[in-house]
Image (cartoon, rainbow, N blue to C red):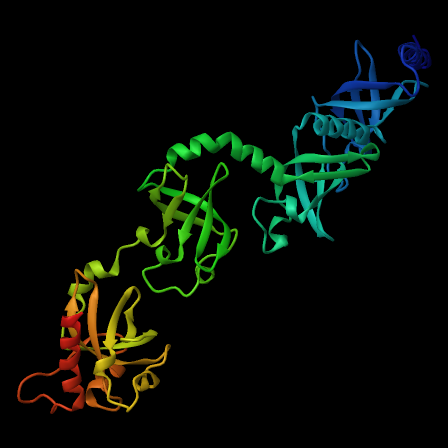
Length: 394
């Protein structure tokens, strides 16, 4: 058989095979080969079709199929063989899947592409969907940009106009996952347990922490740090990942109390080794009460400078002008009661050699000299005696 006859025979065989298919017919096949310009698709029996490689690439020019993958396409020509095209087919297939996911409440995977007005643009397969800000997470997101580029599971909550209007929610999916895990989470919440959670909301008096499964617990501001904290907002923010310790569980009310500082050593547990009567320390006044000034000597350790130890001013609260909150000054330790977590202090007169001890050593302790070489007592010495008496009376 001549070369011309062989070519004619091949074309005739291809034409015969093509007669079983019609132009416009939808077919599904398996990719059996990919060339530089065309790919070959097996569409049943001995029938093999071709499709332009360009139609197998995504918007970035990357092939989104490989040999062995199944593809759906439409027959656009049966002349001299079968030619396929995926134009319009992939979107149609995706839209059918999204409509089914909407009807059945099935989760779909999508990538957050960008922040737009009111929410996010999400790419699901080859379709674009909209996710409102309120639906991207269970807790409010302070910085919307943190979700950009992330791939999540979403629920289709609105499907209209043949997929032209497509709204999705990650929050719905997260809430469903929480409900499914709620029982497991509650079994793990027992006093003493150390758990990971996420801050759901913050108020002045504390933060509510999501422990998973929709279970929230209170982290009170007093249990955030051994140091005095003015507001919970100074320590944590909504959305923060956090590790906490379960302090109490009220089975009757379902209330759960958490602690953060309990994961660290109590600074008072080692205070006896660091503090002693007679030391001069630099301290910061944290607050004023009727009976005296509270002074932070180090994070988590406060002492009291009793009102009676300050120099007379002629008015009941005149002493407070010398130590307004935030004041940093030198204080002498005049009494220590570790079990009661009490340290008695006296303000050291500024400019004296004793105040210089604290200034030259920062927060390091310096013991006052004793014996004949000690500095002569000033009015501050008698104030120290007054404080000792005042603390004994309390």
